[in-house]
Length: 351
Image (cartoon, rainbow, N blue to C red; front, side, top):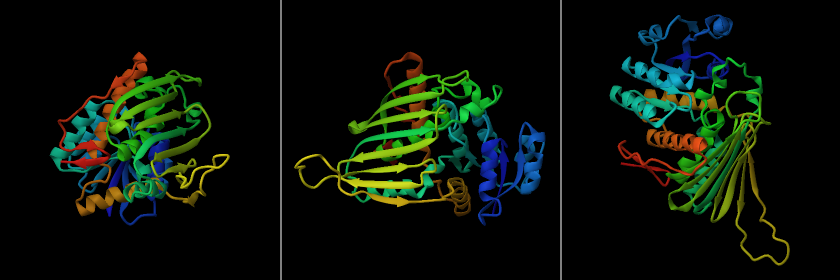
């Protein structure tokens, strides 16, 4: 049983704790730290989580194996480095940091300390996403032509003005840090390296920073990707991978449905119609529990976390380019960072 500490006990930190509370034999939250202790005392008491008064108390506790960071993005780099130096394994919420340089530095610290650094792309573990992955691997999708993703929520309207998520410095490029990074992660895993981006952002709600983003990307080999994300409209999720042999779509706010449509095998004789689709429902899957259990098992088995760090770092390089593009309104080439062991190519790790 991995004994973990939760750092940050806002909405997301509490969701992480709840996902495995009395529901896992692999990981258990035994301690926690938050800047606003008074607001978390009742929750932690009900979950059996011991609250401490500072991060150092977590790091110096020999009975804590790992930390889970659900804190403001700007704090991640320093917290990862401190946790790594203390020998704690780390799961950090996305984005890893707010730029490539910080993410690379944090990853290097974890590598030097020989601890796992896992980034919270929980949607990779969903069976609907695994369905797309399997169809790519076995050839049923064929060669990827393009990918289109939409990920929206109405969360911005519920945030107080002084909430850190409302701070534009914590959320550059509009809705990318809140939701768009998940879609970007899927596209990098499936299509590999992004060459160039064009990012447009806008403000539609009552916040201070932009809350809506459209991102167009060009990948190696000519694949294109489009992401629309917003925290100022109704909640929706749809991710479609278009291949030379069919399309695979994941849809629903909780990714609860996968749909596959093969390409037509004969020319149309009238109106163009599609072959019958294959629809699979995946109700009730807990992505947070899945990622935490996998994190714990990787610690136990001393094996790498399945979200490869080189893919995470490339995502941060793409994010850097998106931030620059949003500021300038121009197409921006993604920096080719080749100084990390292992590089993204066609969605796979290479030495």
